[in-house]
Image (cartoon, rainbow, N blue to C red; front, side):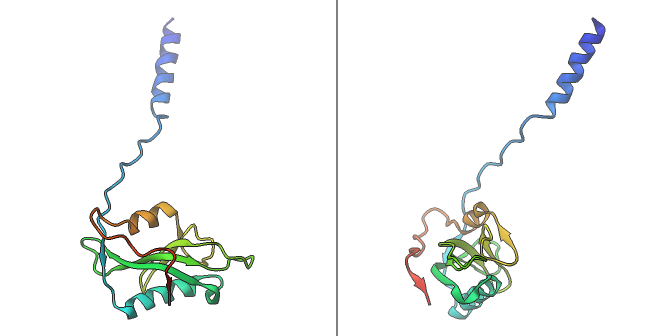
Length: 141
């Protein structure tokens, strides 16, 4: 009987550590829509374009600048459509860029760093009360 109780206690102790971890609560967006100089936007877009597998095929849409509290410089968010390794366009994919770093959601057309869509979407999400960002249908030139 004691052996059975000890076995059950041991099983309970082992299973206690198997509980699924709690998901973090979503944080309310804090980014503000800001105006960035064209040269800054162009440098950010160039950083992203140069990291693509086919830079010449890139088309950019719905570009806007955001800045979070405490962030020294704005980030550029928008959508890019470029060719992948197979030569086909991937469709409009969200990106986040600065002149120093550029990432595309999912990394389907990028040679370097890629992040999950949720990371880019949460970083590009605007705080409540902000105006809507530009439409995905507006091409950046």
